[in-house]
Length: 168
Image (cartoon, rainbow, N blue to C red; front, side, top):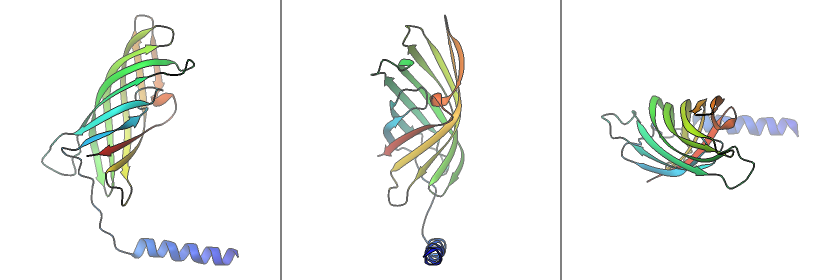
């Protein structure tokens, strides 16, 4: 049984790697992406991305606006609204590696409020057959500053934050 499974796995791997397929870097210039993520805060936020037109299809410079509200009482962040710019590092087949910087307004459950600045490194990938659906993961730092707050934390309250966007 184990021998048969190993043979089937090896054959599947060989077929996947040897069968030619056409792939190219995702061209996001002039495209609008609508979705959600938890990049700026522990809140799952609505997000809109827009690909700024550039001279090369592999340079996917984007701007993003995001807003999120807390519906549960035990969440630290109660409201967040902000924006950022996503700067391309590398465009691979069906994958974009980028860095992002941004800032926004944050209000906490204890009525404290302030400004949140963020710097992250992320990757957005596109599954074969679903070229308009981008799945992203990021890690980085958030810095909160205000009257009664000064805090540094990793993005999304964990080591990584994730997002899903559909591009039109």
